[in-house]
Length: 293
Length: 289
Image (tube, rainbow over all chains, first blue to last red; front, side, top):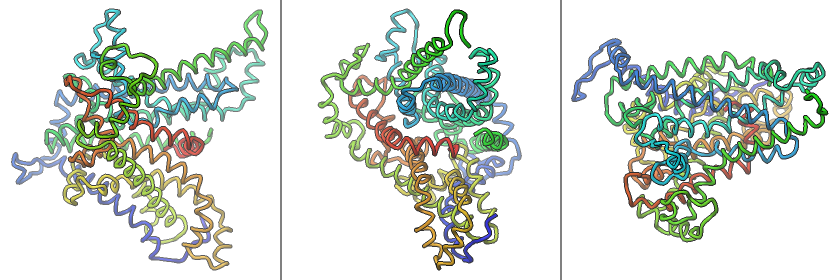
């Protein structure tokens, strides 16, 4: 606790005012509205609304289209989080072994972080679109009927690849930092005891990295759930045939394009609960993370 | 560690060579999409539409880029490339500098003053972490309409400059400033502004640089928000404009200009990240975003 402070009473409020005003107007007020609308039903002309309790939630949760979006989101998020973590960890471990040229590799690895998700999606679409994608072309030559614009599974593979590609940089930087914090003496002791590199990795390095991995798992899940909206919107538009329609894309589509208020609000509230749970989970584990660096 | 019949030194050398091999492969995978779009931006539409694309820059570079800048993008997107770059730069700078200003002010108030509901204010800001725009799209849009902020720079920037993470970081950093420093300053008669300007600001520069990079990227790569609050092409960011240009169904899409626009949408944030790498990596890893 700080002992010395300034005695002013009004000044701190003036300093806080801009941030508080923005959070109240653009965060809390709309969030409260989402909660309010989620328990109301508007008549078709939007003239009056009645309290309907949890009816909107019941309707949303029994809607096959919503359940499809849940399934798509789970598959998409698991694939993205797992691939982005696995590839980044593998590369970070390789980078640790290198003495000369580490800085060069790091510089080359961080580029995708600066690319907008929507553009990451478009880059992959340029390479893999069926009409002129240079990398789709060899797939066709060897007889694979690749068409992400028409086939749901192909579309899913494409958006997962783009989303993973973009997230590798971020994970790589954190894993490199995590690996550097592991005392070298531990690994040397293991080597003297005759442990193979592989054995030492799974019994020493990987457990010590757990806090970093946990933290990244949450960040990657949040990323896959929310930040990838741009990729889905720009590349597939949720299609073909809802095969890449994630929960966030559906909220956008129902509330903003199709204008179904009550449903959209209920979906928003469900998403809010998911974010709150994930954030709470993240901060629950933060102390352990800090402990290891 | 050593394989049978192999010296430990040789095993380590081999492991290192393999590590270089994997890193080079990783770099190729990571850099290839960006290289690909750059190469495509230097070829004619006809070459782009006839796969495979050559792996080296083509002869059309000067022509494509000068056409894109001198009205080519205006013909397809209804708005000039200069305007798109200007809009995006303005938004990214506005968001980054705005976030730094209001987060620093908030953290300063919370750390260096005592007033009722001080921690309540902190939590109020902190909890916004849990309310990303994605979960409250429709009601937020309504607020924007009611305030007349659709198609305005204020509408594109203001709602995005609240920042729980930046406030958190500055608060953490301010708390490490020793009490003695503030005492000494107050003995010398320095008020809040003098203390901030002469002591705190110079000490905060590294953190400011780190947050600037992260938030500039955040601003430049915005997608959902500009999509919601802009209708007019004049207000497009380069990312949104690019999305509007792309149509695989339309045979007339000038792909060479699309590729030029992609390169220009990617290049500025990459330059910022690469040139300010030292602060960026520190900021990212130490603040956990």
